[in-house]
Length: 289
Image (tube, rainbow, N blue to C red; front, side, top):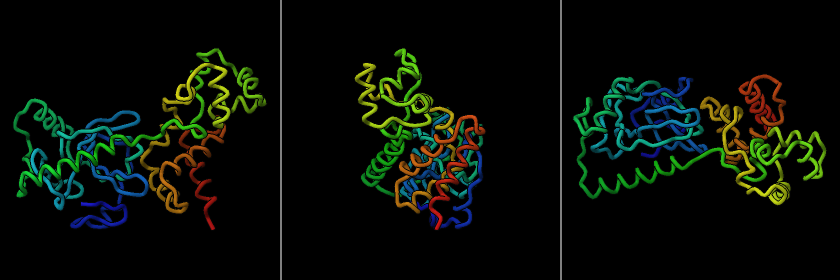
C-alpha cells in the first residue's frame, strides 16, 4: 500500500492519520517516516540512540502480509502487522508523526527474545492467502524499500555545506591565526570558520587540503554537534515539509537552508533549540508574500 502524508490509508480516519503526539521516540512507539514530502513507511521503535532508532517495519491490512510478520491488534492505527525479523536502523531525520504506543516494553522484549531463540512468539503470526511466488516478490520489494530507508542519512558532509571539523584543525596544529593566513582572510572570518558558524567554499577547501595534508572528507565535520542533533528532532518535520513545498526543493536542501541560518546565530544567543526555532521562522518568514 502506498502511503501519503495528506491522505489517510483505507480504514483509518483522516484526523487520526494527521494527528501527531509530540514526544521523543520511545521503544514500542508507532511512527510514520517521511522524506522529500513523501511518506516512506510505518515503523515500531525497537531501540533508541541519540541520532537514530532501530525499528520493526509495519504493514497495514491492505498490504501483502505473511509470516514471519506478527499481527498486532489495538494499535493507535488499529490492526497492524510488525516485522521483528526485518529490524533496521532509521535516522531520526526521517521520523515524522508519532501515533502513540503500539506495543508495551514487555511485549517488545518477549517478541525480540522469541525471534532470537526461535521460540513461539507471544502474539500470533500474520496469516496469508498468497502463493510462494507472490510472497517472495513482496518480500524482495519490502527489503529494497527498507534498505533505501536505512541508507538515507542526513547530514552528509558536502563541500560548501558542511563546516570544518575543529578537532581535525587542532590535530594538525592549525590555530585561528594560521587559518586566516592560509586562506588570506580576516581573523573574524577565520574565527567563524573555525567555530563552524560559516562554511568554507570549495576553493578554500582545496587550499586547506594542500596546506594541511589532509583529505576533504577529514576536514569536514562528520560527528553531529548539538546544532545538528537539534535539527534531527521530529517536531520540526512539518516546518521542513512546508519549506520544501513552498520552495519546490527537496528536504535535504530545506535542511541545509535552515542549517545555514542556524549557523548565523552566535552560540551565546540562547540554547541550540531556541536558535533552531528562530532559524526556521526566519526561513518561513522570507517566503511569506
